[in-house]
Image 1 (cartoon, helix red, strand yellow):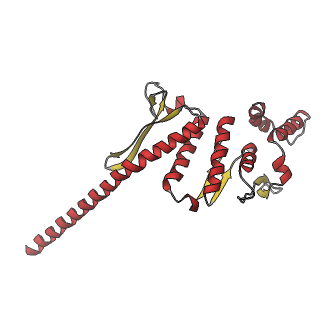
Image 2 (spheres, rainbow, N blue to C red):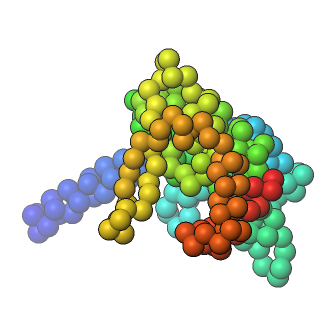
Image 3 (spheres, rainbow, N blue to C red):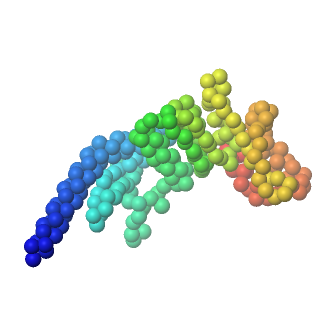
Length: 239
């Protein structure tokens, strides 16, 4: 009986230690929410302003859902909050935000996370097609922000299928103070992929001129130019 009481006493003390530790971690989480989340939301909204999106983060707060930390957020357009998902056909994120807006929002979140994390000079940043579906104005802002990242981070790697973005990044960076390399991937003879360094002549050629040449080849019946390629680039060419 004495041994049983001793075991129960040890178990109760262990439970109290766990509860105390949980309270400490909960207090740390609340302090984090009170300091980091507002700063993160402000950084995201600043980037959205720079992109000229016309919307901001509205509700942005940490919650405890079923005992687990979670984040609740939404967008505010002209002062009206738009939920991520709505019922009965009401406006929501999917129906009110364009593909370019979503790309801008994703990039704003990413850039803000880098800033909040700190120690930017030690970070290697990888951006995968950051300017997808963006118009020229937002493309310009994206290039400026990538140029800043290239200066502040240890290394900045940008993957893109838009040659205009790659060439604008080259124009934005300073070759005297920043090491930069522009690579391209092409299909090899064996059907695989080959990575090559772009020549200075290739970098200097404007993407508009390259597309014009491909369009003319298509008109002339060149079998190497497919209709899908023309359809993919004709809108950007006309803009």
